[in-house]
Image 1 (cartoon, rainbow, N blue to C red):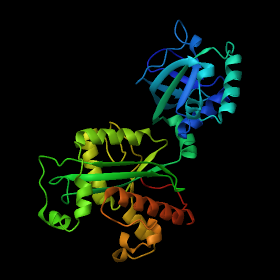
Image 2 (cartoon, rainbow, N blue to C red):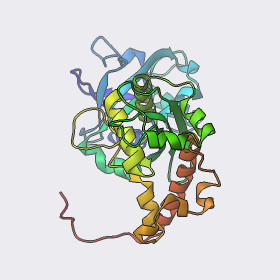
Image 3 (cartoon, rainbow, N blue to C red):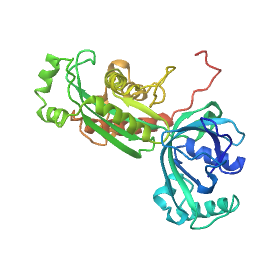
Image 4 (cartoon, rainbow, N blue to C red):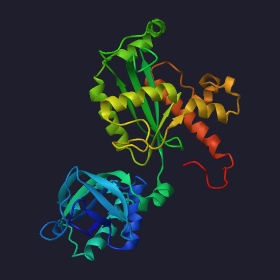
Amino acid sequence: MANALTTREPIRFSFGDTPELADDLLALVLAGKKTATCGALRDYGQGGEPMPEVGRRDVVLNGKGEEACVIETISVETKRFDDIDPSFTDLEGEGPYAEWRAGHEAFFARNGGFSPDMQVVCETFRLVTVLPAGRAVYHRVATPIFIVTDIESDGPTPLHNSMLSFASVAVTADGARHGEFEAVLTPRPDRKQNETTMAWWATQPEAWAAATYNAEDPAIVMPRYADWVESLPGPKVFVAAPMIFDGLWMDHYLDEYAGTRALSGPFKGRQIFRGGGICLYTMAGTLRGAPYLDWGMSKLPAEFYGHIPHTHRAIDDARGFANVLVELLQLSSALPPITGSVSDFR
């Protein structure tokens, strides 16, 4: 349900037909719960709304007509109202099918008439950018998804060596899993293996096999990974243990092959992650209350890992680290918040 306000590019519109509904549906979009919308075919073209186009980016307005976010159309399909099933209505995020149907029947009835046979344009989209007028709502409703990542390499640095494999587990603070990504990469022809690292790999034959079997070109894998991250709802936060190693490798490969980074910042281009990420090593050390020289992931109890062994197979280690993150976030949430005057940081 949309109400177009202009026909110039990019199209600026609000969801619904009242300011209150516009704000309610916008909040669902910003929360990552609404990734689809639909409108009567009769309202498109010939002086009406422009038809949605795959790849087009439009500006969503709040109930006050202020620019709140940018969305990008992923798919467009026209079908009878009665042919729309829960596989689509669930993406609209407006409740169970019966509730969705009642709400849309009422909406269409007051905006030109409703019929079970009416043609409806069904659109799916993704949230691209949150604009100033949407930030307060976004911070209130969005649920971060933590992309906990482990990598394996044939040396200590991406400047001289190659990343062999990596895996990410998408998890929220409540422990819910939202997907996994695992890949094995072909070594870069312009890099060399590190002798010390390879001597260690010789002691880990099973892990080496997992890190080298069925390898793919990183030029293919990394864009696919970036697309996977972007497909997840809400803000995504990169997590590694430690950030200076696994994060460094992922940042380098994402920059080299996918035109993005493992962090966000004041630079142009595609930004798939929010903020500077989380170093699990640092987080674990501080929340344990241990002195720095007693930090280390091996110092955490096995229960924190969910009793998943650290095998140096990327997906195993990422799953264990995801469990650790959830435990640490629970510890963090129990601490009293730090408040004070406005920070001097700019």
